[in-house]
Image 1: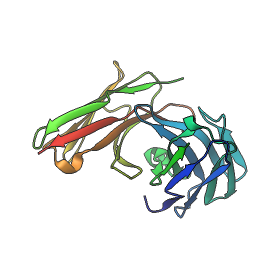
Image 2: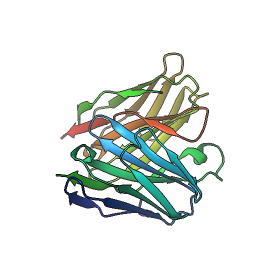
Image 3: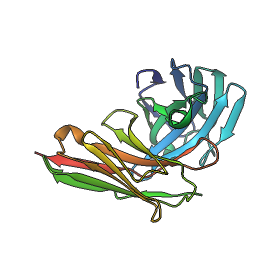
Image 4: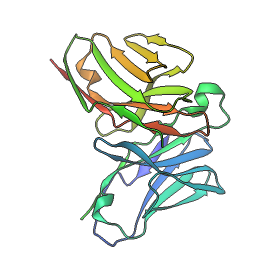
Length: 117
Length: 111
């Protein structure tokens, strides 16, 4: 979804480096999410934020941190990258003001492929 | 936590029907979704079903829900090569706004 933009699209880094993945959205949604995708494991939730002052841990938050700089921006940081953090990372948004089904639809960015050597 | 399971891989011939299956454990699921992921892209919502329905049809797509067995399926009629992608089943429980995703089923369509 072009309204959810992730940068960079690809990144190679070394073990121990700090790295930040950025996500911005023009959908005006209040809720934002970071997921990690590994083959056969589907998407696992790392962190989520329901508004600018709200940050919540997901299923696999260890080794990650996030910052919600504005309603439209949600960044994910790896303070000291390790090889098992090699994965495809997705940002998603949703709109809590929508009713019923629409409230639960999440819109995804194109992903960031991260390799930690 | 809640769990959503899918088979990893499905191969069909162009023009045949494809059936992708999903099972889930959360008995309080309210909405169930199918997302499609094409190569190099994020996930896009394909279709959905509310938990009080047992079937939904949308052009070539048919979603069947067996709530008693906690089984969801997606049938694609007249499968085309453009349908080749990874399909994710996801469910939303009764509390919160969080989705639980299955591992994804890679559909390969042979000409």
